Amino acid sequence: MIEVLRPGLQTSVQDGGRSGLRHLGVGEAGAADRGALQLANRLLGNALDAAALEITLTGPTLRFTSAAWVALAGADIEAHCNQRALNGGRPFRVPAGARLTLGRCRRGARSYLAVAGGLLVEPVMGSASTDLGGGFGGHCGRALRRGDRLRMQTGRALRSPDWAGWAQRCEDPARATLPAEVLRFVADADAGLPADLPAWSWQVDARSGRKALRLRGPALPIADGAQRVSQAVGNGDIQVLPDGEPLLLGVEAQTVGGYPLLGRIIRADRDRLGQLRPGDPVRLLPVDLNSADDAWQALQAARYRQALALAARGA
Amino acid sequence: MPDPSPQPRLVWQGEDCLSLRWPAALDADLNQLIHRIADALRALDLPDLCDVIPAYASLALQFAPDGVPDRCAIEARVRPLLDAPPATRNEWEGPGVLDVPVCYDARTGPDLDSAARALGLSAAELVARHSAPVYQVALLGFAPGFPYLLGLDPALALPRHAQPRAEVAAGSVGIAGTQTGIYPRPSPGGWQLIGRTPWALFDPQAQPPARLRPGQRLRFRPIGFDQFCQLNESPE
Image 1 (cartoon, rainbow over the protein chains, first blue to last red):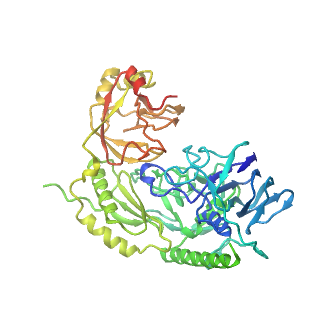
Image 2: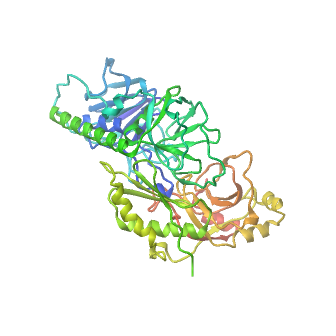
Image 3: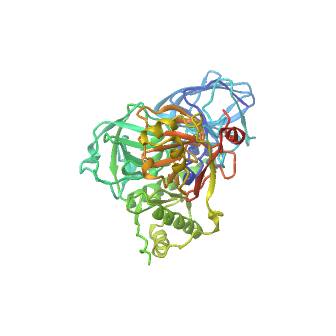
């Protein structure tokens, strides 16, 4: 059992999300940085999308009534277990009765705390994810509060691993050549892109969250006259608001929208949406479908190699 | 002889979603065609297809492969279906038109009287004209289970409130522009509220979780306030 002593800014139970229900107006929700969720789970030998805690900007203080193996991934976060400092990217054992104190996320917005076996919550529409906007799923359909108690599945005991290093997020090779603020996207067929779009720079606005990231900065041109009706949209879609500013849709975005679409962030870069903080710079780089495919395949291959290496170590 | 169905453009919305886009319009016949095509596409059982999402004049096929989608193969299976779409819905649609009970009353529709006045009608006339047509659920979106309905009498069009209400009761039936819809759960909203259905349109624990389906046809059946209270599935 995990007791919540301090909840943190926005801590919620998330898994890989609920897919296949957007035709009913139900979005995926789930981890905003799914790659980080999966890495935390991999470190513990969990199913990749097992339910974990998504921590936003400032983390919770938790008391573990029973011992558990846990792991952190995503943004680097201040972490102490009974006053002992901890690193993300490797499993560690929290003794029974211990207090786990998580502080601020550094260089990123979200961290994921996984427990061996995963968190135990009643699934709603096939998923343990919390849909914060909809008020269902996860723990009581909301972010954690002081006094909440969470149950854990029975976890397997890890072979006491000799963790000399720590596992880091995988990337595709092209990503390493790009500045951090650049997000790659596939342009929409109906979008008119300014020729120098990659040079345009915006800042993430404070009015951002799991639903969408508002960007403040130069106004994009909008083709006028076109009659517009609502169409299906999802995580990664880039809408152009009436004032010309881009809106990057997140995991809890509305499932339909009538604003013009600039394009969709490529799969290999979508997890980055979950790590952007208010004030961060953003630039948008259009790429073709082949580049998007290459990036995704390279990323998946890197993750697969990492999974093999972790399994060999005892995860 | 009916016109051949308009052909949509096939557009990849990102690398993982095939968007079929017809010319933008609020057209019940086109929207019905889209629902028939959606049914037929689901029946194709395309690999890694995880959702088929209809909208007014478009249909999105969302894929989620571990690798990359074979776009040519997908298009090769979708195009023949568009060239020869199914003529009628399969039995899945249900026995016909669904009667949705609605209490049109000042207690359940706080804008009923002002909306009627704005349209130069009595409240009774507004109710009669709102409950006369067969509506079509063009799509579900904006919120879980929220239906966008086609079929509103154009003479009943009303502007949204300049200042949205902070809270609209679950089941509220409203008009905004030329659209009419039903709020499945309490939320802020700017629509003109003329009544309320006692039905719960969305329940995450129910199977299926949404009471209405895309493509469903329905009529509003006026009921009295006492009956509304008896049937109310979302008591506050």
